[in-house]
Amino acid sequence: MKTEKYGTLNPDFPFPIYKTPFFYGWVILIFGSISFLFSIPGQTIGVSPYTDYLIQALGLSRTDLSLAYFIGTMCSALLLTSAGKFYDRFGDRIIGSVVCLLFGLVLIILSYVDKIFQSLSFFHKILTSSLTAIIIMSFSFFIIRLLGQGLITMVSRNMIMKWFDARRGLANAILGTCITLGLSSSPGVLNQMIEMMTWQGSWRFLGFTIGIPGVLIFFLIARDSPQQCGLQPDGLLKEKKQANDKPKAVTRHYTLLEAQKTFAFWIFLLTNTMFGLIITASSFHIANLFEHAAMTRSQAFIIFFPAAVISVVLNFIASWASDFIKLKYILQVELMGLLLFLFSLLILKPGYPVILLIIGLGMVQGMFGVLSTVVWPKFYGIKYLGTITGFAMGFLVAGSAIGPYFFSLSQKILLSYHGAIGICLVICIILYILSFKADKEEEK
Image (spheres, rainbow, N blue to C red):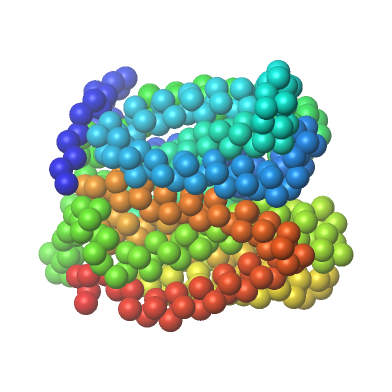
């Protein structure tokens, strides 16, 4: 598979970065972290504060909204591998600018979804009002998941990873800290925004906040790679390397098909997919899960902050350690976190189960921040990074599509989420056993 690079902007526009007196990768890291936060309205944790309002405005049941979320998210997952190929061709600046502009416009349009639904009332006699609402929300979720969780996330992470090699773990530690703090605080912040300016007003505000600054960041500040600018990853780090240092193994650049033939690829991929399924499902239904455990909506959303504190600490440690240890050890910690999180959901009630839930969530989020970013360039190189991460992101998004609907069906059929949780537990145990063989090909 040959991917040609074309259509990229002049790296010296609007200023030549090789003249900066410091390593420009740190600028990429700062603004790449900020641009990742633009994806929050497309993440499940950014959608969950709006679910009850959408159910009320459109007259949907929770299962119907979960079905729409499943359809829209799954459709977006199917396009992410192709989107990754476009990313490899056009680069961060063009793709990032276009996606941020479109995402901002979509959020503004989405704020009128209740009026769009009412304006299509003539379809209600043909399709029923519920089916019309499901179609509208399926398309809406498809767009915001593709642009937000899919493309903005992929572009922001890949852009940063290409500027660091030996310091990739440190860069990811800083990125992970920003991501965790942003994601964990977003439910509370969005909830306050909704109370201040209604759910429609908050989406309009986010549309303008993401659309204009996002274009400016990617078009003016971002650069596609250090090599394109006459620089190298890590700045002067390689020039300062001592002659007696242990030489670093050259990373082979795998195509997607070559990566798919390795055992580790599928173990890391499926673990991240289960993360997407479990965390998305629990976040989407978090208020209802806590209601079934005799707790309130406010108690449900509070868990994200202490979990974020744990996640930040573990993410920083794991990101730093990823430069020195095998990534399968970090993978195993993530799987242990998933098992603890799922077990806590099974026994959820006020008291110690909530504490275990917070610890498990913190472990999972901290490790996922490393594995979703570092493993692909470290194991498979950066030449086809967009295609590989696009495929991986497609599986992650597919998992996040299945999760909420899978949990809804469990609740509808069994009158409990325990059936879905139990199946997820079995899968995670199998992945944990297989993780002991998830080594990099060159290390075997």
